[in-house]
Length: 613
Image 1 (cartoon, helix red, strand yellow):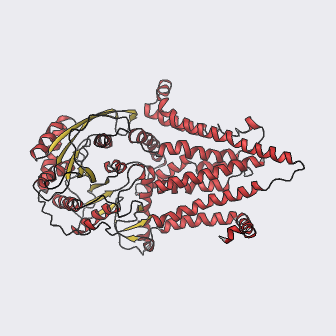
Image 2: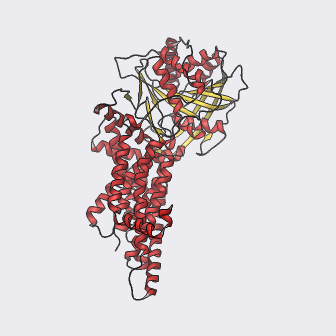
Image 3: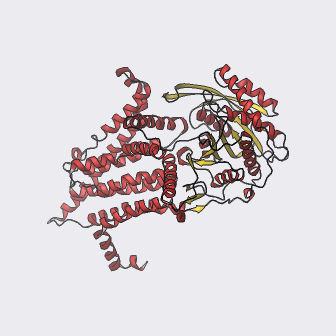
């Protein structure tokens, strides 16, 4: 404190920071990237451990034996689904009633803002079927949940068969202290969103659904099951939920513990677990796994039905059956025993899962990186913005030498006023990027030979591209030629704006905040009107939000070892844009409005600084 309170020492410190501003910023950037890459190294990670005492041991005796019956039930369900041309509601109702459940249905409908060409749907109507197994020895104030989406074709039939057989088996047990809800939802995430809104008496997406006639207690935890083959060689766990939310780490620990107990091969991000952490190949494998999680979390997309539970403070994961490693094979009975064990441990919970981490990264299922380990990487990048803001503030605090003191006041006033116009127009451009693509799709379809989805995506690209010209030197039309002080004031505002924006984003979704910081911080730190215009403009475009999204799509498939050509990457990039807009309209995902109305306008401010005259 003495260093800051002493005027002489404070001036010396500020002088040092301003004199070495550029080298310190460069060191901070390299240190931030190096810190992040080092997170996958074993000494930087913590070993998985169970924090919840009620789930601390897997010593329960699983007696599930009906694996073959689950496969037979799955075949019956597939026949009925093909006969009905969709969800066999009547057959499911009867099947659940025969197993002793209280059975209810919920109808729902949703008109999409534009057709979803990936799944070929526009008007969505469906029915959810769910059954409740009442707890025989409890006040029925708490519940667990098992869901299986009814997918198109023959996908996920085995999951529905397993759900029905588990319901019958659980019905014969007397130790349940919580209600158990068995749900088969239609139209994947849309059906799940309708059921959750109906169960919690909320309507945040404008979907039409019938009220639920049957309710259980407050849902403590949920598992979403996806099995699409009679042969299961490994189980993959999916964590990333809507807006980058993650379930409590104890739920992941529980899955991993039972996989070890039953000697089931488990994967994360589709990658097997490795033990050679100290080898270059082992470290590379851990980095790839962690980067896949970062990219999926940054997308804000719900990568399974479990992702919609997290906004209601219900801990949930999706478990997928994989059939790719032929040298291994897990029987359906073993999968059923694993699920039985997990539900018996969750049945012991006395309160919601809360003792373990909610913010973490996973280089593997046996190790994790806590928030206290990965946040310094972002802090080093954010420090660059604060150092640049300090440097600009010092430069602005020193008045230029002029003969007339009144001139200084007028120049200062002009510098402040010159900020307003680019600031307002940049954000109006962001609002146009957010609103115009959906509202102008009918006009685009009438005048151009494109579909509604193509019209939305192309309109978004057109508005984004037009934004590069709209705020260009807009200050000159209001206050004449820009001053040297004017661009410094604008950059100071833009740098502080970006620091607050990235900081808030990283607190809610670290992966998204870090990826944006990697590309936007160099732009914010380095751009000035005195730089060569063309090469600097090319670099800024490469580091813009749209190109960051394009590179992320390319990197995601490279890490998944499914490389794409440039044409395929571009088509997938367009699909990701349309999916992001749909996720916002259907489920309330926040990545699209964040990028359109905050991140892109902030980048436009730096674009305006580059062409300041």
